[in-house]
Image (cartoon, rainbow over the protein chains, first blue to last red):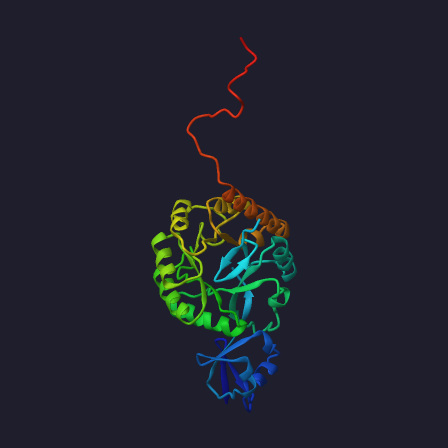
Length: 69
Length: 257
């Protein structure tokens, strides 16, 4: 079993994890241009999404700008 | 009239900043922003909604016309605010930041100690920090000393539309300020904004009063005019307030015996 904790919720993958952060975003249909990502508390630069490998158990935060005061 | 607002070296013609929360649609938000004449709009950072991942309000904001001011809303202490600030910078490339630390969800009053702590860290990291604070003149001075770009005292609790409940404290903050004073939170009607500007506030920040109005686009334009009128009145210098009448018409030449 492989799992990532994404935005506070466990997400299970049947066989293998997406290879990279960019692959995960693609799978989730999230436009990479509009998000900022944090893995285990470390901010990942947008340029590094494609080269950032994922491993089971990681805590991933996908964050974006929303309306606010 | 050459009357620019300058914050951290950047010039603004408009002294009205707009918050982008609570609008019923991105279209109405964009139209209200346009109608307000603002040049700076605040935004927040939140988790991507996994079930609706492509709701992108940012597409509705022309970033060439409007400077984005990310906020740290949701932060309950300095550590959380610093984390949000770094994420905001990574997300936008913008080093401008509305620092807000509000541990109490009921009144949403800012925590002065944690705000000062976060400001000291973020100024050192190169952020242009605009802290949201209670109307506390001592705190405002300490933040100035820490190198913030403005101070942003609240008029009344966020979203309450109560107007300038903290007027006398804001007057002291303005009198002591070496950085622009932006009255933020609680301004419910254009008259409140005008009053703040007449007192000598450098700018105001408005969100709920516009977003929750029946017609946000019209209300945004009303705030634009009120802020301009208040600013112009401040520059013009108000006439003295007196205890008794002082006739406006001549007291000579009456048509009587």
